[in-house]
Length: 436
Image (cartoon, rainbow, N blue to C red):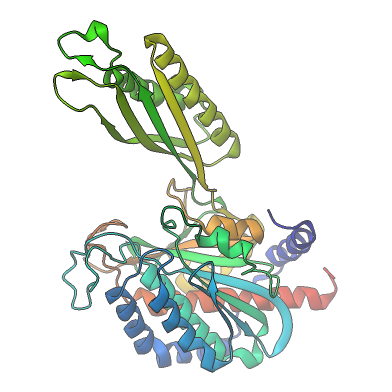
């Protein structure tokens, strides 16, 4: 949770920022031209870096070379760089030439255990590992933004913490990692930030940005259900307790948890993803294991569904005289966009892209551990379109996912303006005496 003192200050700043005239927040034309000029200077290098990261993908908590590359680009420029944060993460602080607030921006670095099938000349060189979720684009865009703002740091009012995070897709079994661990290890504390920004590529057209005020993504929990029956010959079922039949009833009954026992205006998804059990076609199975996921937007639904699920399992197994184990693991919370910060940043997006390219979206039932950062400080998280003209809408996590690289300089421009606007706006408010 956001510390009370920081929360009070942030709420006052963001409320005032959201209510300030748009002109008070806009990057001035001279600075805007400088941003464009710096992007053009580094664009080819940043695309080259993205391709290198794409060719050399690393799984969660193993992003050693990716982190080394990022740190090597930022240390010579005077960033305050910490490495080894949350295993392999990099935290780089850029302090502006003028006093002001502190904000942060996050990029995730890890790849997925997917065999690439794009046929690109810079396709993955690591068999079975691929940047199928676009984290190579995230890292390169945020790194490029750091290079741009470094060139403008003399006029920067405040500081920006650049977070290069490992293990967004989850840490290896038995390990900790990701945004939650970065928060615990103080990634947002030195200096204490008043807002944190993040984004994700999405298979919508290049030039389009999508976001939601309030809930952006769902909380993602996982469950394992073990049905314990009794084995018997398949021709004499009366002598056993059939775990397969019981598991089938449980799967069917679980579908009513969302459809009949929760508020339909409060979205939730319950999916049984795997079923495993039995040893031979003519033997009554004594054990079946179900695995799945639960996605919710509200904590109320999250707690209620967990209880309802175990009640279903307990009662159905009890009817047949079977036993059970029910394991439920809370995962990432819901990403929540601070409404005041979202309202403050929307004019920036509209100014850069045009009103028709800025889409206010519905919450998505995917999961994202940026939620832990947005619980520490008010957050703003958006989706960046990366589908080029004529390209199919290839989904994330698929072996053919291939973002259009024209989105890279655009992402750098968007982040540069968002971050400078946030610093300028908060500095102006603080300087006016309306907050402090």
